[in-house]
Structures are given as structure tokens and as C-alpha cells.
Length: 81
Image (tube, rainbow, N blue to C red):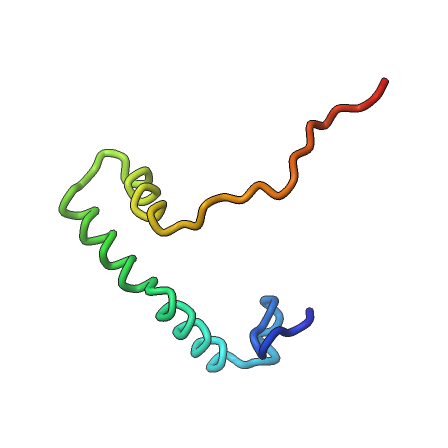
């Protein structure tokens, strides 16, 4: 796989980059995107709210942070007889 800015593009890059470098990249990526803070927040809210639909609750929480879907191509799948 080709590389982009020194970041691995496949699971096999693990062997080229080494475990420590991949761990560092993962920490940087998660911190940059505030993943630990969001996970902690949703788990705390989940415990206090104790909703009957846990997974729906998680979906609703993270949906606030998701980018809007973009339709890039539509195909009707029609064929000429």
C-alpha cells in the first residue's frame, strides 16, 4: 500500500512502522479528535440515564458529532430489455 505523510495505510504497515510508532499515532489521532473525552462523557451519561435502548442512546449521542451524509452517485439499476 502507498503511504501518505508517513501514516500507515494497512494493517501490514504495523511491521514497517513498529508498534511504538503506531501507538503514538493512535494516541495523537484520538486526542486530536477528542475521542477519550467523548467516550467518557457518553459512558457517564449512559450510567446516569440508564436508557432501555443502550445502543440507540449511543447512536443518538454520537450522531451529534457525525458529518452529514453526502450522496455522490445514484444508480437505479434499470436495464434496457
